[in-house]
Image (cartoon, rainbow, N blue to C red; front, side, top):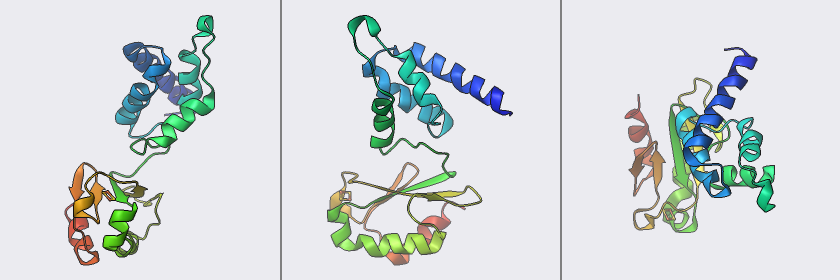
Length: 165
Ligand code: FES
């Protein structure tokens, strides 16, 4: 796909999603969420277009680009760049950390050859960190896509990753 067509496709996707959810500031999160679900990430180029589409000048309400950007980057389930086919979200909050989280993230990094925030060259894996996933009682915890793994030890990491071959 050349650049021009890609831009056109993104513009029509934004157009469709904004029409579905409504062009109001309250719709920013549902709009971002749907774009993230459709493409697997939120291309940076869509943010100014979303902002432009949900202006309500007659009420004097203007959203800044930074508002849309901070919504997109604040919610950790959204990504602003393309991710691998499998996305690991490792909980780095304190309760998981004290249960041995550091050793688990080190095992993940070693096994995958990735630092947090990176995607493998073959696009198979992305390793991300997240704050508390709400299941601290079984920490350390990480998600692989929608699957949650608790009470993880470094020794279990290779076996868990092997399930996604
Ligand atoms: S601190 Fe890790 S799930 Fe809550």
